[in-house]
Length: 92
Image (tube, rainbow, N blue to C red):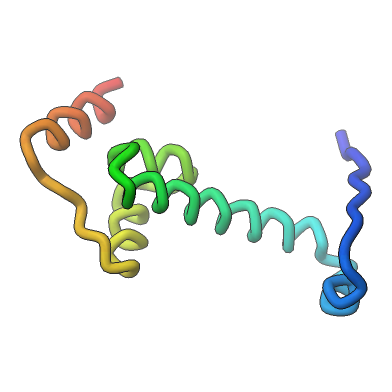
């Protein structure tokens, strides 16, 4: 079922969006994916969630999340607690 969404945007943003008006749904999907990924990486960076949880939150595989983390200079910790948490997540 398709829903209607009404947004208020600045004039400058509206000007930027005009060329893409036929693809706004794609633009929103891509933007949402990016926001989810960045939010998950921020939580991981602060140590609030594991890399596995960040991957699930962002809707990507653990391998993809690892690649994104490394690309941002983050190194996933591999202490015993983290390994146990990641293994438990895989088995659930």
